[in-house]
Image (cartoon, rainbow, N blue to C red; front, side):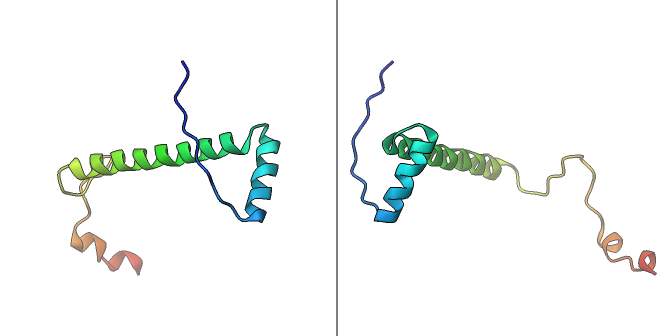
Length: 84
């Protein structure tokens, strides 16, 4: 299936453009494809972050422990006898 692609113009500093050409060549691809893949990875990363954030905030408030143990009491946290 052929995907519909859009052309964009990107303005880069000469040093950045040189690096991009060398990096793309070392990867065996074009600067255009390399930038497209980098931008797509960034987009997917942001989308995954947003989904994870939505799942987190959808949970009931409270402290979650994976093993199900209760949190220590204040007395347990501040017990100095065990340190002496």
